[in-house]
Length: 268
Image: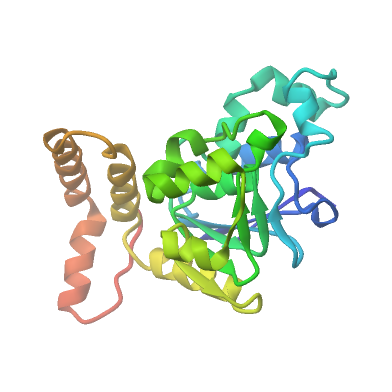
C-alpha cells in the first residue's frame, strides 16, 4: 500500500497521508510523493480544489518521521533508499512543495482527523480552509528536541493567529486543542469524526461551483498581497481584475445569472 493515496472526484483532488501505523508521520517517500502530487494537480485544469487528510482515526500527521526522515535531513546517517536520496539531493525544494511553502494556485481544504503536530501542523498552515475533529490537537514541539519548526511556522503562524498565541506555541512546544484552535481562528470548523470528510467535501464542492479563474486569482492576490503596502496590494488586485474580466467565464457568470440558470464554467 502506498504511503500516499490520491484520487480525483469530479473537480476535487483528495490526498490522504497513509501511514496510520506511524500516525501518518512523513518519511522521505511520502515527502517526494506529496511534492509530485501537488505539482501535478497545480497543472491539472480539471482539479479546482484539494482536500488533504490522514488515514485512520487517530492522527492527521505526527510530522516528519523522527526515526527515518530527521536523521537524513540532519545528516546523521546516509540515505538508505532512492526516496531518501532524492529528498537529500533536492532539499529544500521537495520539502517546500510538499509542505505547501511553495505557492499552490488552488484552494486547499484540510480535513484534520486527530493528532496533528510538528510537520503535520506546518502542512496545515499551508492550507486555506480547515476542518478538524473534536479530538484534534495541534502543536509545534520541535524546540523540545533542539530543532526548529522550519517548515513555515516561524513565518506563517504569526500571520494566521494572534502574535502571543503563536509565540507560546512555538517557544513552549505545548499543544493546543481543537477548541483552542477554533478560538484562535486557526481552524474554520470543528466536527465529529463521522462528519469530517463530508464537511470538507461540501466546502470543496461550493468552491468548485464557482469560476475557477476567479477563485485562483482571488487566492493568489490574497496570498501575495500579505505584508504589502496598500497601494502595492491594490495594484495586484487591479491586475487580477483585468485578467479575469477578459475571460469567457466572466461573461458566462453574469449571463447565467440573468437567465436564471447554473453557470457552465470552462476555465477560459
